[in-house]
Length: 102
Image (cartoon, rainbow, N blue to C red):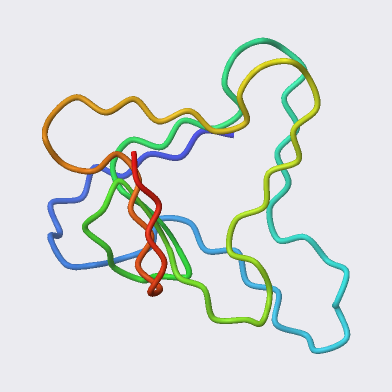
């Protein structure tokens, strides 16, 4: 499938919408990506927002449920999370009256 938009329209719009809003479809997955090669399964050019309609961060996740916001299950010998920080700002900062220092 190839989708292209060559519109000069500058307003906010969705090029692709996947809507599954039936209340009984509790086990339905709206989008499933399986990549069996070494190429990336998803390449997002621009900002990515999960739970946001508009965001100005490279990755923004809005946590609204009584569940964890990010879950990483690490199997193997490499790092599950790696933050490379070049500059003077904190590499990792947690703002919930708890601070994680770099």
